[in-house]
Image (cartoon, rainbow over all chains, first blue to last red; front, side, top):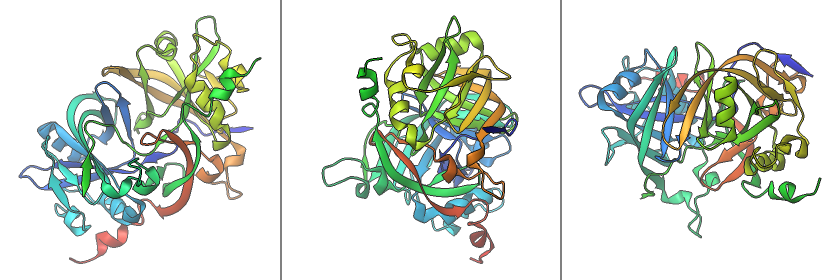
Length: 194
Length: 194
């Protein structure tokens, strides 16, 4: 039996990321976003929903660039702080959170280097939906901590230890146990006779 | 130290969902998608990236509707199968996977009722990006299993037990431990003096 909850956007779970931009004058800024997803393979693009009133919206439209930075669970309180406070009110909020930035190599936006994964994105397109605009950035470079690779050289999401957001209880989670391998676990079903 | 991996879309993690549509003639179909996110609050909207060649793209454009269904980890192999096989080749793939559907109440699309969360979406907008199109659906109704609520009546993501996808190793995961409460854990930082 299911309960009807009305028009609620209960997509579970979503990544909790920091969207990095430069404010006018070159101050690095970031906002916390969970409404973020890969949205194209060729070219490789990432999208993020930004509310119209946000400083990040103004910054992306001016610089035509942003970064998507994936924090580890150890950064949860800092990530939450960056989501609570606007760069309009505390221009030094990244400093205050103890989050270090570096200028990205290919786009006009700051990498939040304390995050194990940083993606440099060049604004490719945008879609104004309602309260939020979906900004599509073409990923030009991905930077990943050496510690996120296994000794065999494979990228291991458990070593990234990404922060995960659930909208249903407004809480951050970690990544759980590995359940199955994609493009593999379902093969036995496709082979089975009716 | 970070390693540069080139233009890779390493957003972590993403939800593994089933996008439900009706094929021509009314056969229920679904595709597995991880490139899916809430993308607007007002109106409440969910977006999903669909490759141009997919039957789901044709179906959404004809019916102007789709559902987003969030499976539990116990459904991993079935979800993976639904992602491997096209409804063009196996029109009965949902049946074959043992996944039951029901017509949605408000839109022309099937709910995959074995999933604990089903969202009815009416196509609101679309953005052709490259290989993929970002389809924006306005959520008209959310259906959630009674078992996903605590005895206090709160929705608990651990009871939904959503399937989580990581693109870096192409594996499905479960949801891990709760780390912090959003809009709360960061407050102590916003109050602290410099």
